[in-house]
Length: 105
Image (cartoon, rainbow, N blue to C red; front, top):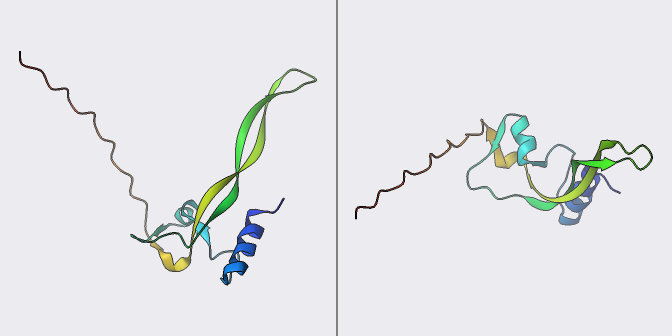
């Protein structure tokens, strides 16, 4: 099983992009570095990458329930440094449910 970096590197070579291990990142990876994707930018590359998740399983011998880390392929969108800028993600304000209109008989 190839790692995410290996898969990105292989795909980058196929399209002629010079990947150095740091110049293609997901939205969340850029956000952790204090960067945001510029408005209107589309992902440079979209591909399936391994994403870890936790699964509760029963141990067959002891019968105890334990948590395992497993992996699944998820579609990921990758952006280049030219597509991001310094900034913070703006959180959307939660909308209040609309008040119910009273019916007049």
